[in-house]
Image (cartoon, rainbow, N blue to C red):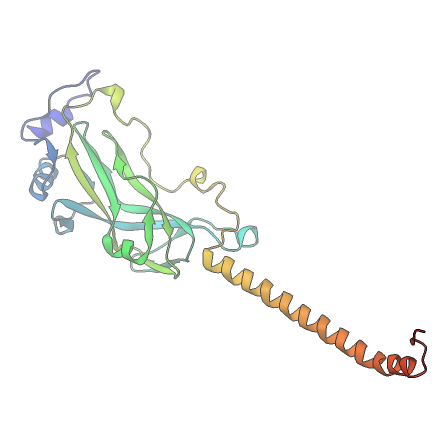
Length: 248
């Protein structure tokens, strides 16, 4: 049985796949069967969140978004309630955590992505696309808003997708994830992300402001020179009339 095979302590070396676990990507039916066998792949689990052969994960209870103002308004980890909105401005990075915990058995690996609707808005997953055998914990997605506009996210909304696939055998201790589970966005991830980060649109606006300021100064200089010349013109005309500048 799948449950008894998983309950056995990890072996030093590899072993065959458990019975009833097919090789390759899992269908929605296989995912549900393994979940119901007692292997908590997803916690909490809701059958209606199975979408074809993947499971849809929801936005968790906190996030981190970089700031356009740097040290003057440094970004911080922020709590978000279910159905509460928050924004990722254009050109900014964010760390988003899943609501669910996932468990990847030692005979499988997983692939992760953003939902297509958010990709089309310009939200790009830059944190990788796979989860190692043996991993247990929440998932943190590093994302970048590559669009020219703000993208709005809602706490608890379906945001990520995960696919499960069996590998050719059950991995031994040496080749499984064995670090503590991730439960929150920690300081190590946020360190170094407090500097001012300008989007292409913001850089364009700054260049336009500088260009406008330079043009205004040039106009002012030209007007001042014209005024000075006008004030001195009568004196110059008198000097010419008196013959001071007439050469033999």
